Image 1 (cartoon, rainbow, N blue to C red):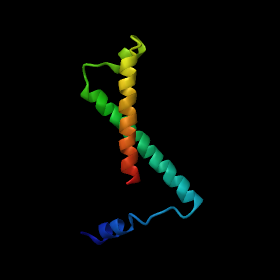
Image 2 (cartoon, rainbow, N blue to C red):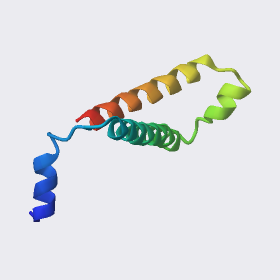
Image 3 (spheres, rainbow, N blue to C red):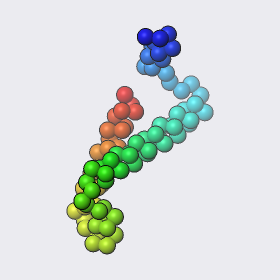
Image 4 (tube, helix red, strand yellow):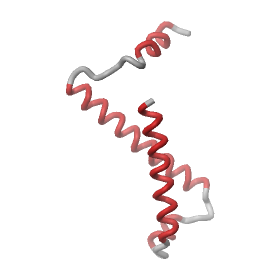
Length: 87
């Protein structure tokens, strides 16, 4: 293992923001990462189900069952992303 990687892993569990600016920056950064990964989870589900047109089902047919499935997919993927970010 390279010294840089060893140093990063050694400090990974001890890093905490020490100033308000660092805390604000890390909150913003992890929030953006979480939103992007949550959107990626939804897009992955949409890609894996090519026969179901989500926008058509929701906008034109007002299919509440599809809305519940999509909300469960979004919440589930966001829970997984949050668990991955927290560690």
